[in-house]
Picture 1 (cartoon, rainbow, N blue to C red):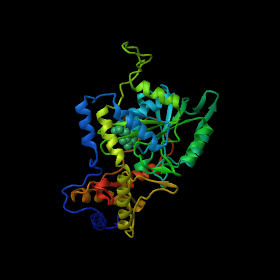
Picture 2: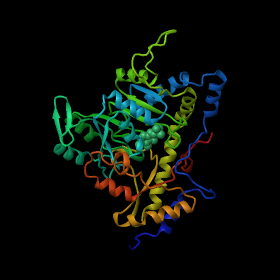
Picture 3: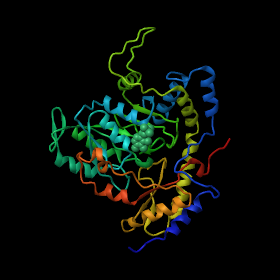
Picture 4: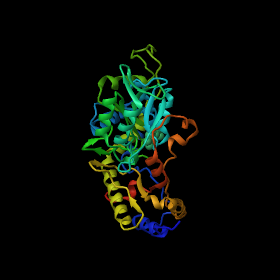
Length: 395
Ligand SMILES: *Cc1c(COP(=O)(O)O)cnc(C)c1O
């Protein structure tokens, strides 16, 4: 194989953007330069550390306001949020749920927790998310609409829901996906775990799904340590989400009554306190991340065979994890690049192993996955922490 770009040139481009004198630059470090200490101290001082408290209420209200949905329900992590989204959408054992092959394991696991079967979809290179046009063609061949819903002609199972994911904070092409879901009677749920602060045609991601999931894991744009949230514009589903994530306890002054099998998925107040402080800084975080992305874009311009992945048309990305994409002919150079950057103390990572290649999912139904397979070989995430960007107000 003849190398098209020199690994050294790419490394130099990265170094020109990144601060010097660090032993190691992780992919995404949390930043606690606001009121985190103050709010956590208040939890400890008052004893409100656990599953109810004013920070939980405040965090939920502020999340709903920011994302412009009717209800946000804070939970222990993004995987639990996805699980509850699927349950409340009516996903039952032995249903199929359409999800991208190129996603983090949580999307597929949440489907499995419902006893349902993930059915893997291909991605498009312009968004790194589900390709709506390819999907429409595939469903025309594979799916059949009956009075009780959409069915997979091959497996005979009902296709109840689809969970597209906004990869690395870049919005998937939602309008045509909403249209496909309506046409085939499939419920849309958004895995917006990576896309707090990302907008599609001016609307925050997570607004279009019947229910959507956010994550506040330690490596996400904002963090609560561990945490997640369910978003919905349906008041009744919002009420059910709160109920099922709080052990389905029927409110009463002293009696313990539960009207269904619920989950203990509540976000503790101490985590929500961190979340409130993080939300106060979100606009500064996003500005810093966009500044970093723009400097990366410029630094990689002109290097043949490699490009910085910029936000898709009609969307505004949070640039959660910055991404390099190698041309097809250069895919073989990826491992040398991973090695050189990690050796230099600059953390880089390849894409997730595609879901259908994992042992527990390799017998699941799937469409042609050629674009996802290609992206898997050509993707690279590079350091993306907010402190690497300018514009952060270190008050
Ligand atoms: C982070 C993430 C989740 C949720 O992860 P948790 O660690 O459970 O909060 C779900 N889906 C995707 C695509 C993610 O990146």
